[in-house]
Amino acid sequence: MHCLYYCIAGTMPSARKDLNDGLSKSDMEKLTFYAVSAPEKLDRIGAYLAERLSRDVVRHRYGYVVIAMEALDQLLMACHSQSIKPFVESFLHMVAKLLESREPDLQVLGTNSVRSADFISNSFNAYSVFSSSVAAS
Image (cartoon, rainbow, N blue to C red):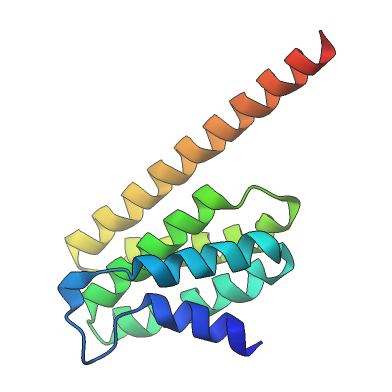
């Protein structure tokens, strides 16, 4: 449990760091490894990021919102399993928050995240169809 929050919190820059540094690459790699090796935790990861993003949107901390969405996009690209459904639920909740925002930049961020998720979904479905047809022959 502590590893989950340590990994997620590590991806966000602290108050001492500059927000322009963005997503911490090494901590994001740890979080991705954790999510891939324990896919049953994806719902908790998604819920935590959704809560954090909602709080940051209300407090107008848009740099943190961008970082949270980057983390979500990377996790969506890395995790293709059956247990991703609860994670997608959190993802859609966060996208809805962004689209409901009055900030045009956040609306664009939400739209881009949906586009990338759709691309990932289509690529994954095409790969599944291709790999099953190759296995059948």
